[in-house]
Image 1 (cartoon, rainbow, N blue to C red):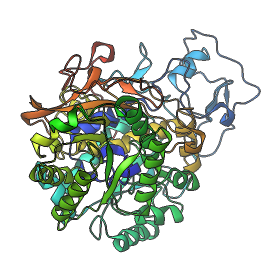
Image 2: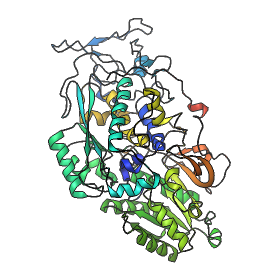
Image 3: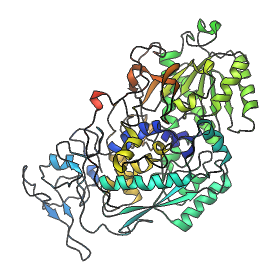
Image 4: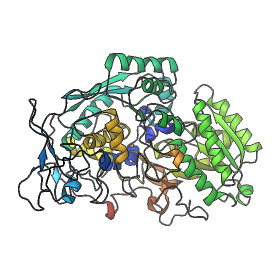
Length: 609
């Protein structure tokens, strides 16, 4: 996410540190697209599932004529087994036996019965979102039973890591925004989210068996984190793990060593870590190495060689920018990621006058902030590239004011420091000069879009974890999207192949675009890509703007989204001054999705659970 981010490449902008991010806006980041379009958001010709090279069509099949009125007609079947009916295959299909998407069926001229969950006018499932996933053919037959560890004919065992309710480090963070969701609330909400996904996504006869695992230590304790991973591997024996401690990689490292895949299980790692642990480590949000490329490009194209016109110090406003890097450091991997950002800036002719790491420690942060601000000030830094956790900007900005230092604060895709809920807790005289990049998407009122909207539409009531639903929903969102494309033969390799073969999700304003695998969005050394969000947008802080934060609380202070939230991939930043602090076209929140991203409405279907 950013150099040495506490959230790091576990990105998810909150998913990795579940209690760091009790904000529904995070759901707008990933849920608005990930829960909906990982497989099936492309054009009608986008197969979205496994690549054609993995197909297993039979050679004796014949194409069904377009317009056939015989739903479910298969052109061939696998041999009859004692355990169930035959499984259909189709000539020209890129999918394994029994797996078929609406788009591919249309392309092949097949007329199949996709069931009551499918809107056949759109070819999407009947959920009220323009980014609804493609319809998958309901499966009948033998799913193969125990196709992988933690998998049976009926269940898929998932271990879900939860931090301690009493974790003092996380309480230090969440108390600032009055998050009161408990682990019990989160477990209840997650179980009910599973009901939604198993209603609308194809699971091939299986349901998720969710096993919550409460941490045995605080979020940065390597010993307890490793012990928790061992306990999960030896006692629970899951197919996969969701979530992990956000300030140590020990948990993710131990799981990977034991061959257990995990989604967002630790702080950021260099890109080669994910490649070396092929298919075992995934993120939902933006990755550190990728974000570094975007930040370096943004700084070089939009800021470098120009006056620090948005600083709060009159002497800085007419001075060409001098950059410093202030970043959270939690491991050796943090420093490696910071090295990469500095190198990327250097390749674009941008040098750092100061590079200052800090540790997230509630007991020393005030002293740390005092020393860091003094160093930035002494180095003549006009523009602080700030790669932070969500709470420490409060201490750094207060200390900057105390030392009469008013620079520009340049967000390097800040981990939740780019949310209204946290930014309102910072020194507003300082944060009035904050702007930069975020991988979050331009927000829509939660009653109209995102995880909160989806949950209340389906269940008819608010979730127990009404603060944190936006950061817990991305886990099942990613999992079920991949599961539908994998098919009945569920394996770790199949899960990876399905994610890699899926086309990038559509470009939008109110949702980011994600991709996995190799799609040419990144340099060769960063592919294949195991990290989710690929694009960013530019924001700036308006302390006078009034509206809701991500917890639906009205108040003063809102981020404004440049050009209505226009998003950029690497290589798309035009040269020229930033448009931060230009009110023309800047929005704080959409009352409803923009017309191009509006969605139909449906009545929810009953849950199969």
